[in-house]
Amino acid sequence: MRASAIALVAALGLAVAGPAEARTWTDPAGRLTLDLPSGWSQETRNCDGCTFVDAFNPSRDCYVLAKPRAQAIPSARVRKILTEDTPVTDAVWTSNANDFQSVFPNDSATFVSRSLDAGGFWPVQRAEFTNADGKHIHGGMQMRPSVEIWGFCVAAAGDDRASDYDAFFRGMGTPQDAQLQTEVQAAEAAADAQAAQGQAQQQQQQQPQQQQGGRRNTHGDHAEDH
Image (cartoon, rainbow, N blue to C red; front, side, top):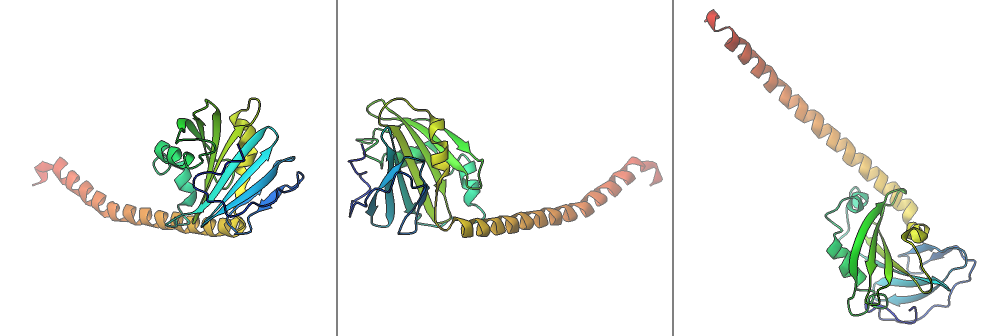
């Protein structure tokens, strides 16, 4: 399967596969890093404005695409996007899956289910698909303020399970992740502080109204005083 490029990727060149013992691959364009399992190699095909990597061993293939977002997500929102149901819908998953034509020929992605891996700082959305050949395809997606990272894995031979790719999908990232984590944490803290301040102000505004309402009720309970 790795001999075929995805439809989205117009191959401009093919990098030499990395050594089997390599653990971390870094995109020369600065869009992507991959923690490769022991015994895995990678082939890289570049496209205009995105990075596509085929990571593989003799029995499994994982295709990863890192593409910049047309509009950046505010840092305080980026992690929450993946923990909510609305922004990354089943339809969004299917549309992106069908970009990987070597996995889903003729837009044959059939959505099965999705889940969330929130064990690390960067949440990973997971999804399960079948394709035209009846193969079970495992998907993983991460997001940064300006980049989306989509990955799809399939067994080239034998059977596999979704959990077989947990480490691989968690290992997708960018070379800027340390700096981005600091920025996101600061933005989240500022947003939380602003929300807490707004809630405190609202409570202060409600207190005089409650007190006034209490005084009116007191006079109403003693009508004989008038």
